[in-house]
Image (cartoon, rainbow, N blue to C red):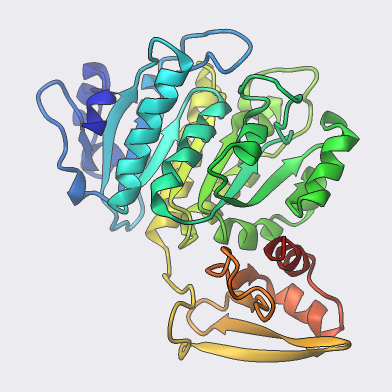
Length: 383
């Protein structure tokens, strides 16, 4: 069974949670212990640790107990979603063994429509999470919150700095869109920036998002898999001092992004990686997970599937081409733009017919400015 790969939560963490008040999160969590494994079908979300660091620049041991304690001492809101902590996928004999185990665990959870939250390890663990979608028969939108694109060099073995290249080139290729949030230009070769444009992928600079964090909301609303590199946060905030990384998201910004990911009806797996054992960073990671849980519990389920009776339709005439069609949810005031499939109705991307957007993009269209995200998706669907 897939869940045989999971080791129990430490007795120390379970005992700690049992001693918390009934108002704190830890008292509301079901734990995988030496004596009991939670009935998976009863839960909406599960937390899994993966202390695998061989995809980095050297092996290290990180105890995920401190993250769990920091998380479980927090107070939940008026949440309805049930949470289970399934313990850890321990490193296998080889890195590939760990990938295999994590892929199978995530795959089983996706089949049951259960949200996996993966913590710890290096960011190359995003790769087996992506491969878990192979059995879903769907295209995948991957969003990485990171200062770098993680393309790596041609022929380089998969690692935390090159896993995206593996995802792009490896068959079966189920990647529809890749978006990077928070890249810092000076950490990325111009060739990689050009490649992002050539493949019609999306990238938002740190400065853009720091000036207006809401730019990320439509992107995360369209994601299936969200992967956070904790080093995308300012070193002064995460307490991991690195003189070469003085810039990054603030704690408030990274938590806002996590909440956007959680509130997205489409996001079905979430991971936070490259953490260390520093107490301040463990506390920050716990709050990132808390904000994701907060968002998840406030999902509106307003993606306009099927009937669109609860949406207002706007048709915007555009010079020299067909009109653009927008939908606004009467429930949340969120916006979508319709993709034009006239020439690509047999394309494998047919399911991607509605693209989340912002009210500002609707106003752009009214001023005869084609939204960039819509333009890129159109070109991608015609490849």
